[in-house]
Amino acid sequence: MEIIVRALVVFFFLWVVTRVVGRASLSEVTTFELLIYVTMGDLVQQSVTQQDYSLTSAFLAVGMFALLTIGLSYSSWRWPRLRPLIRGTPVMVMRSGALLTDVMRSQRLATDDLMAAAREQGIRRLTDVDVAVLETDGKISFFEVQNDGGGEVDDSGAAEGASTRE
Image 1: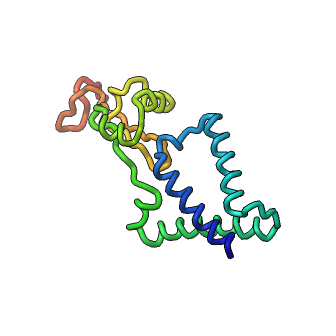
Image 2 (image 1 turned 90 degrees about the vertical axis):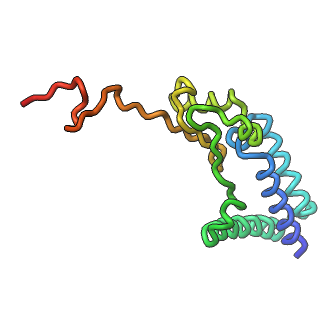
Image 3 (image 1 turned 180 degrees about the horizontal axis):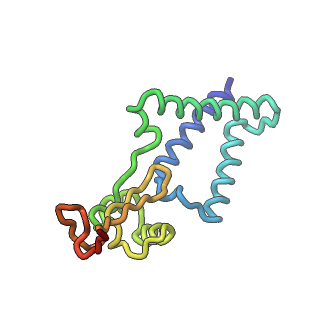
């Protein structure tokens, strides 16, 4: 029973840590951070099982983590009002082509990281972006400014200067 309680406490501690660390930090993990997370996993295992290497302890600890993960997922689906608490909410970091620096600062998102994410999606200049949203998983969605082709539309629906065949 003690392993179940320990697993419960550690699970929620890790959930809080991932929420505090922030989504921008979790979107891409460096090699060093991966090693830190693996080390944290080992420390968590030791704190949950207290060096009890029996199969029963392993099944109880992993089973408890799995049940809690399923429970959070079900709660997020069943009670939509809990979803922002459990998963977070997307945050707009750019509006009308302008950086929202206060929001970026609160999310610990550097302009260089925003520019790198834009380049990865084939966007050359941030001035081409109308809206950028930091998603709950740490990825950034970009919505480009819509060009109407530069021609004006007359009442018939044909673009000005376009040739029509009769």
